[in-house]
Length: 105
Image (cartoon, rainbow, N blue to C red; front, side, top):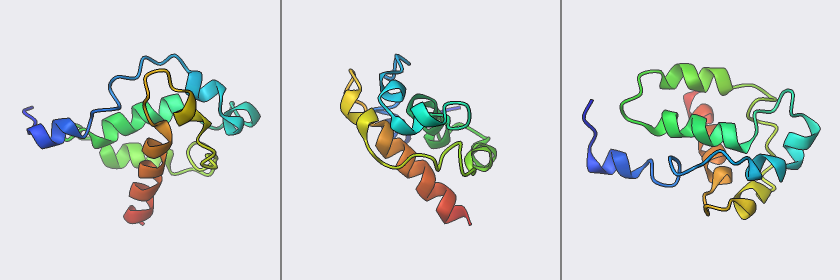
């Protein structure tokens, strides 16, 4: 599938994640509920696919994340974004997923 330059630009700041998990280990919500809350690293990668114009499973991905623990356990403390060694912003990605889910209801 071809992708426009504008659509490709939306992925900047997400595909660079090296999955070091600094964001997840700095997240109190993840400490308290690691068995239920997916955590910033996983949610950042989920958002990378949700925003990809070539992906054909966006609605299924959003439906899977629409859960009181998987996504909504994030309390926007933003430790994840402060500790990322690559300067990425998982907190913004999580907020964007929440907004997309809210808009879909």
